[in-house]
Length: 307
Image (cartoon, rainbow, N blue to C red; front, top):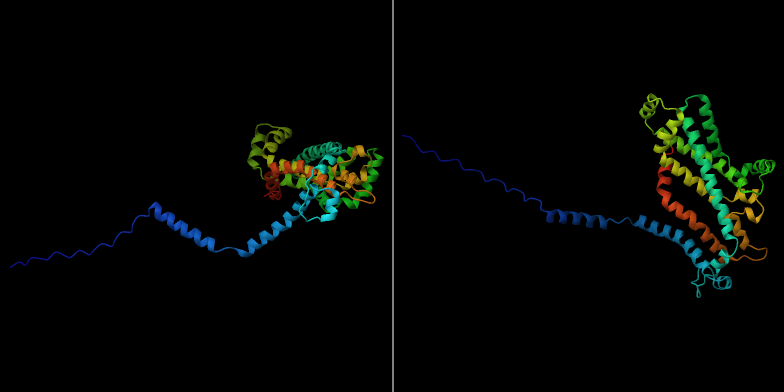
């Protein structure tokens, strides 16, 4: 006699996890952000505040001093809040030979940057594409200039400038400034040009392109970042140069902004508010240039080592 078989009891299925809804994901992300907020980096915050004070305090003194007259500055002190704000210091600077100094500085800056860019592009391309010992010796010769300070050779430079009848002229400032900018600029552009793929040079050679065409149509377009860096670096060095204008020029007609600040320094007194107003006005043009070109400058300096 057959007995009826009892059906096997089915095991209960485990409950499926609820799908992650957007609300749950948002809650989890919020909890993660709250945990990260609790882990504050207190030493880094303190260091940032200290650095902000170190940088901000000189700027505070610089700007506020230009808005005070000379007597109030010496009576109240440099850190005191000014009682009467005035723009007489800026008016005094603008009514002097400031624009002459500004024009001379602009000429020196543009000419120096142009000379440095043209020469460093040619030298950098020669160093990268020529494998002879001569080119490597030239490159080492340029790098040797990094170890020679301008103060060590200022007397020979002075003698050369006087023998060339260039003393007390803007060209006497332009040539030495460009020469001392070249080592760093050649190093930057050589590293930039080494990053160009070898296949691109070979394809241009297969097309029968000359070296000049390769330089102008391939190397220069692909090295725009390095060329921008070189131009900005040379412009900053020329704008802030003080040693060469001091030694190699004499007349007021050849003065640049760094020497023009001496107009507010007398034998027995110093007009500090007017002096700092001239400093502020001289900073503004090159600071604007730096704001627009700082990314190219940093990227070019970071890639100076090449591959």
